[in-house]
Image 1 (cartoon, rainbow, N blue to C red):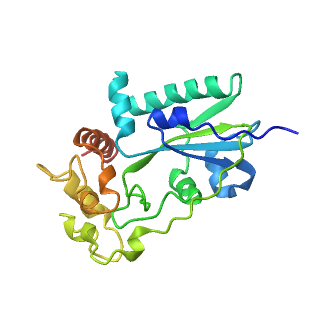
Image 2: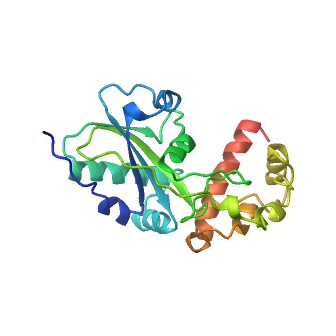
Length: 232
């Protein structure tokens, strides 16, 4: 009988990759599994995320530069983790990469992700100040995790400060107004070019809010991508 070992989270936690969820590939919905491309030879999927400011602090301390320092740091950290905990084990990083992995769907299955009016996932502990950092095909001696059972904090939010804080009024209607959001973000001297006023107004997990440099980095990259694809 194969020995089942406790999941060794410490090295990942210390490195700022402090959210982990191990899935049984066979138990994933087919629509989610299909986003992972070829899964032959693997039995599990490791979803890695981060919550709060620690990851950015670790990335900054590492001295990694370039256009994708968080992705590069994540790959290096995972390589070191697999080498230490599972030497010789085969694994495949599907995200970050070219495969369009359904990260939000995986987050919902893990219990991490609940929708918000401002279209960023939220949970009761971290608020919206977390992100998906990697999805890794693997076969490990660790048992798949149970879903975290947290309800959505938005369900009991009466004031909805995020709605009134949005300068584009993109959250005011029944559905999110994507065009209003994009037009405001890309307008000259926009107050949302490198941040999201609605997200900042949400009180859930405020103690974990990213520092200003991380917010500028994340939203600056997304704005560059928008301008590239929308040719504005």
